[in-house]
Image (cartoon, rainbow, N blue to C red):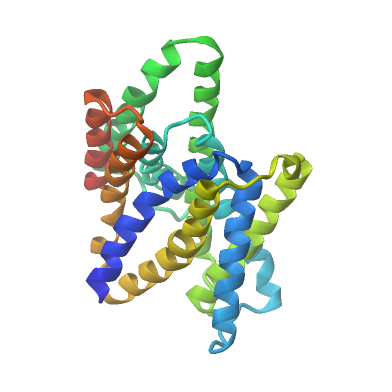
Length: 284
C-alpha cells in the first residue's frame, strides 16, 4: 500500500499541471484556486472532525494562516497565474527547481545548513536548465515574450513562497496532526485567493465549461485531497529519500501530457533542459 501511495503521488501530482491549464480555459486564476483549496480544505476538515482531536489551538491559527499564505497563496497561486502564459509542461520543469530556493532559504537563516560545493554545482546545473528553457522564448520579443517573462517571474515567486513556507512549517511545527494542520492551511490559503479574486473583479469573468469543471473537480478530489493523503501515507511507511523522488517524475509526466493533450511543444531543447533540472535534483 505504501508503494501504491508513492506511485499515486508521482502520477497525480504530475497531472495537476495539465488540469490547472484546462481549468483556466474558462475560470479566472484566483477564484479557480480559491474554489479548489476552500473545497478541498473544507471536505478534509469535515472528514477529520468525526475522528480527530488533534486540531491546532486557536492561538496557533495565525501560524497556519501564514503557512497558507506562503504555500498556497504564493506557491500555488503563482503557478496558477503563470500557467495562463507558460505551457503546463514547462511550468512543471521550472517548479521542479524548488530545492534551489530551499537551499538558499536554509543558507540565509542563522542556524540553517551551509551551501556545500556539491550543492552549489547542482544549483548551477539546475539554473542552466531554466535558462535553456526560457531564453529562446524571451528573445522573440513582443508582447507575448513579455507576458511569458512575467509568467517565469511568477513561477520563481511561487518557488520562493513554497520554499519559505516549507521552512517555516518545519521550524514551527506544532503538536497538532499533520492532516489537521494542512486542512486549516488549505482553508486559509483559499480564503486569501478568494479575497484576491474578488478584489480583481474575477467574479464577472467566472464561467464553467464541461472541461474546466471536470478539471477543477479533479484538482480538488485527486490533486488536493487524494494526493495529500497518499503523500502523508507514503511518508509514514517509506523513507523520505524514496518518497521525495516524486519530484523527478512529476515534470516528465507533465511534459508528456501537455504535448499529447494540448499539443504543447516537446523538442530536444525541452528534453535537455528537463534533464539538467533532474540532474540538479539528483545531486541534492
